[in-house]
Amino acid sequence: MMSCSLTGWAHFGLEMRGARKTLEGGLAGRLVYEPMTDVCALMNSLVDNLHVLQIPAIQHMVRPTLVTEWALIESAIFSEYAYKEQFGIRRLRFELTKAELLHNRWCQSTMSMHGIEGCYSRKGSSTALPMSVMAKFSIKLLPDQTVNLVHTHIEEFLRTKCEELQTRTTLKVHLLDSCDPSLWGLDARYSKALVRSISRVYQLEPDLSMNIVTCLPIASTFKKITGKPIILMPYAHRMDYSHVVNESIPKQCFLRNIKLCTGLMHELSLLPARCKCDVIFEYCNRQGIAEMLKPPTQKTLHKPSIFAHIRRTKSVMPRDQQPGPETDPNKRKQLKDWLCAPFRRNRMSTPK
Image (cartoon, rainbow, N blue to C red; front, top):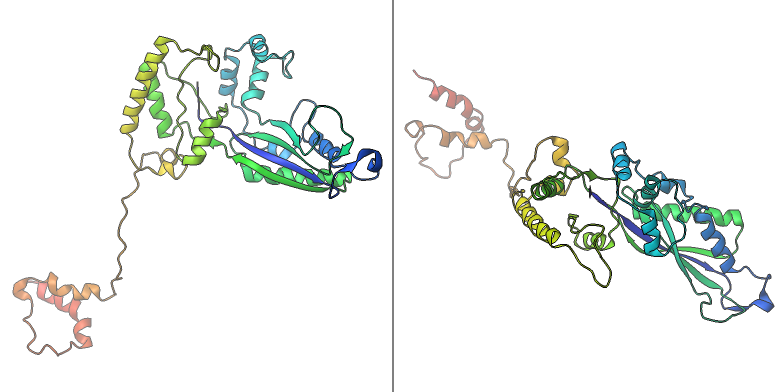
């Protein structure tokens, strides 16, 4: 299976400020508004017990999963027991069916909390009340979820919750890092080139999907920096020992990857250098034909006047019928010569 989309991310900082300096819990406890209490309440309001985002505007931007994609998810080879053993997990949130677990992993937006800056995090205990803290969390973005819209919805939701909780600390929402998700069509010329090369090497046409999103941060970073299209090419199997001490790849898979890269370079060399699909999403598929961009033309500096066709009548006439040169160069033609030039041309062109 090949995915035609990449996830994005948005890292936020939820900052809450109270007094100007750190206070003592035994002296100022219960008398001042504590930012740590407000931060924990706001972070708890973002998700429910099933770890689902409680912002409807963000959830509505998620694309629905097609029937064919549900069939791909159900046919995927996945072991819950091996997954839990790999990460040392006792239980998972979605253990009813394999399809539900993979759907929440691949096709749903998630939020993760990473830590709180400004609080006491060393060993031991402390009675200090931090008056300036910042909770850091991130949201995995799917196609159609732009960073600007998500940032707006997050800030509106948190300010609404502050009014409901009647907090008296100052709220600021910072966008620390972000990357928009990527999406390219199933009929894009790069996708078709990769499908042709895979079919030639493996003798099997791969399945394409747009809503089963690939989470590969390094590929999203490359696309963000370069601004160029990204081609996701499978290189190894899921059962290979990747990211371990004895990382390896089978010899047969390595030889096929060499053929796949060579075939892909050949297919890309046959594509037109300039296409409107690079500017307008799936332009060739909408029009029905592959259309090249026209070469840049130079703009005319002088705009022809309305009498330009009249001035060209002298050069259009045959040489034997053209009038001789004027004896007096300073003599100017009268207005009737310009107005009667077309009629004179017709009279001279008609046979006697």
